[in-house]
Image 1: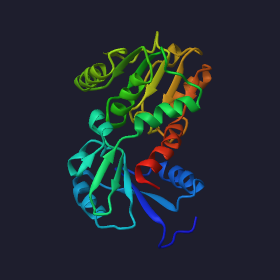
Image 2: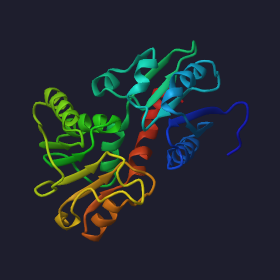
Image 3: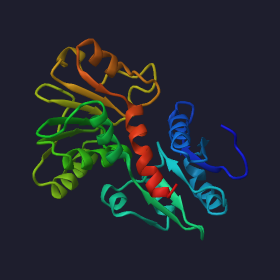
Amino acid sequence: MEITGRTKIMFILADPVAHIRGSVILTQKLNEAGCDVAVSPLHVKPADLAAVIGTMRLLHNVPGFGITIPHKIPVRQHLDGETARATKVGSVNFVKREKDGRLVGDNVDGAGFVDGLVHSNISLIGKRVLQIGAGGAGRSIAFSVAGAGASALSIYNRTADKAAALAAAVQAANPDCKVSVGDLDPTGFDVIINTSSVGMKAEDPMLIDPDKLTSQMAVAEIIMMPELTPLLLAAHKRGCKTSLGKHMLEAQVQRVREFFEL
């Protein structure tokens, strides 16, 4: 694309940024939709987050920015407001800059993730779901999975207290879904979801025993680089339906356009 003075510039704030592919997908999909927008990763250390966000208020051709690891929860304290959805899940993945410089956060991770599952022909209605991870993206996805008709949701996190707190919040908001804290055994589940960052690095361990995956299961990732994580490769080998991390982001584009009024 040709970037001019009319082009709106968006950033994705993260630490680190070498793995980020979302900027490419967002730019491509927004351009295809007729939006003159360019998206770029911005490497921001946690100690510098407040200063960078302060600068964002002053950039008049920046309609807002995306937020990813490790800033999805800390960013909230630097904003002027947030949507009811962001407040419910307790994390933010997109921030809109109003004309007066006010910053408002939203979280479309969960909605985009469920949309991505639909695109991959994976249904959650009546399904038993194992979710790995309870971080910024994991919070949003847990609420959306329960709200999309799952019959049961088991949440595993390395810090059990974090999983327990999320399970309690999701259960309170979705009484028809049985929400609990679980382990890494996929036996008995219909859908396995990895919302953690494990699998992003070559040296990362396999999250679950691949021999316990069956062709009746569906496996979904939120990691975009590598596109096929060890978990997804193991799932493919065993005939599972899969949904890639890029499917979640691709499905978010329309929601991002609506939020930013692009």
